Length: 264
Image (cartoon, rainbow, N blue to C red; front, side):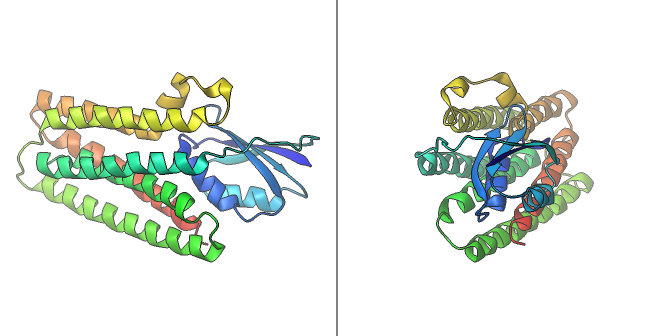
C-alpha cells in the first residue's frame, strides 16, 4: 500500500471534495481518500503507481500538485456510514437557499442574490450527482454531470446578459436590505454545511475552525453580496450589485466546467 499526498490549492469547501471523489471514483487501486479542507490537502491510499491518479486530479484544475508518495502499512480506514444522510442534508440546504435567493433576488432586483443562488445551485448539482449516482454506472454519472454542467453555463449566460441590460438600462436600485438579510442567512447556511461535513470526518474536527469557514468561496461570496448591499445604499448606485453579480457568474461558469470534466 502507498500513501500519496496532494496539495489542492483551490479546494475551499466540501463541493470541491465531492468533485474530486467523483473524478477518482472507479479507480480499483484506490483504497481510501482522506481530505483535509482547512489545509487543502488530499491523501490517497492506493496500490500501484500514481500516474493516472495524479492526471485525474490535475484535470479538474483545482490547483492540484503531488507533494509526496511513500509506503504505508495502514489498511484500516474509518468510512462514514452516514455519508448519504449528510449529502441529503447539505443538498436540501443548498437547494432551499437556491430557491430563496433566486426568488428574493428577482423581487429585490439584485443580481448579486441571483448569482449567488446559481452558486448554491452549482453546489446542489455536485451533492446531487454524488448522492443519486451512488452505485450507478460511470456512464450514468457522466451523463448527469454533462447535463448539470451545460444547464449551469446556460443560466450563467442568461445572468451575464441581464447584468449588461441593467448596466446600460435605467433600472431601479436593488433593495439593499433584502440583499444583506438574505445573504446573512445564506452565510449561516453555508457555515452549517461546512460544519456538518467536517464534523463527520473525525472527533478532532468536531469544532468549527475559522479556517474552515472563511477560506470557503461560498462564504466569501456571501460576504461580498453583503458589502455590495451596503455600497448600494451608501452610493445610491446599482453598480456594486452588478459587479458582485458578474464576479459570481464567472465563478459559476468555472464550477460548471469542472463538473463537465467529470463527463469526460
